[in-house]
Amino acid sequence: MGKQLTLAYLIEGLSGWHPQNMGMPVRPVIDSRAAGPGTVFFAFKGETVDGHDYVSDAFARGAAAAVIEHDVAAQANILTIGQSAPDETLKTPLLIRVPNTLEALQTAARFWRQQVSTRIIGITGSVGKTTTKEVVTKVLASHYNVLRSTGSYNNEIGLPLTLLHLSDEHERVVLEMGMYVRGDIRFLAEIARPHVGIVTNVEPVHLERAGSIENIALGKRELVESLPPAPNGVAILNYDDRRVRAMAEHTQARVFYYGLAPQADLWADDVETQGLEGIRLQLHYGQEHVYVKVPLLGQHSAHTVLRAAAAGLVEGLDWQEIVEGLRAPGAQLRLVAVQGPDGALILDDTYNSSPASALAALNLLKSIDGRKIVILGDMLELGDYEEAGHLKVGCRAANIAAELITLGERAHYIAQGAELCGLPRSRVHETPDCESAIAVLREILQPQDVILVKGSRAMKMEQIVAAIRKEVP
Image 1 (spheres, rainbow, N blue to C red):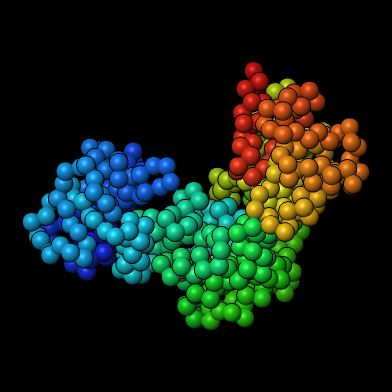
Image 2 (image 1 turned 45 degrees about the horizontal axis):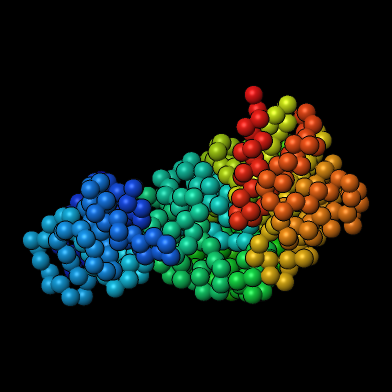
């Protein structure tokens, strides 16, 4: 076995003392239901639920230790960080008391990261981070043992949790890094210390919190600013996005551009979308030209392919390994195609929405044969771009949809944009909630229709998909 996190290392990271009798391997959990032998439960105090109330449950499930910041009912040995003297007689289950549980998690992750020299790839950007993370992982996994952040573990809790699963058997780590405001990514990078930074794009996502698109660009730029100098550090930048391209001036790392322009180090042309069959494209790298067909949906996925291939090239893979990883199934996370009633096809893209991702979904819809129904909900946190962003999406929908259903107050601008761009008013249906949208859909749905359902998470539009799928015999 390689070097892995033990309870002794966790205690050392928090206190500076390495107890010799705590050498059992551990992994962190933040939900007591996930506790079991070999786990450490970090008790977080949330707005509605306090994890401290579940420490006894974690111990009952076999947890070796719990990290707490205030008294709990559970009976166990107690180690108070900063106060308790080193004591080799400590036993599990162990309560580790700290001033702040979140800061303890981050401190432990920062310490453990420094114990393991594994090369780390960080990914940020407004749109496409998670899918890029999955495809990069599949490419690198064709050659290396890869640890990746799961789900959307891309914040001040998720990233440290991922790092605490690291062992020196892992040869590469792929981490997603999200931001709401400037400073977020710098903080995450300070914990993770990535060698490679991939930036997808800069779009008006979370604009309400970030304040401006310039602030978003500055926030994303923190990743490339945090990279080590060349040749060890590499910034993989989207040449087609001028804000991302400009980040090259703010890093000491080697810059590797990808894009659809021949000026990029790795570029693509002959991009052909084949509907639900994926996309075909030709990749160019120096004098090398490679045709690939990959199971990713939509024209916009060409950039995902380029990012993953760039990561493979930077990390020393050959083209056979890169293509093998790109062809691996299961990387398409967000938009999924499911069967509806009477031969209808539902494109379920209800995970989240922004103008950029909505336009990408509409472009995919256009490439699929059949009469098209588009159901679009509010896109949140767009700040000053709210009206313009919704209008732009509505105009694009008008060129594709036979019928448009909008959901929510902000989506009124989608309806307005569709009408301005030529969709007859009789085919635009504004609804206030999911139930109303479902009722309209049932009235207008015809056999073999193709239905796109997309909106921000808060709109809970998965209810629409679930209701229509129930009608499949």
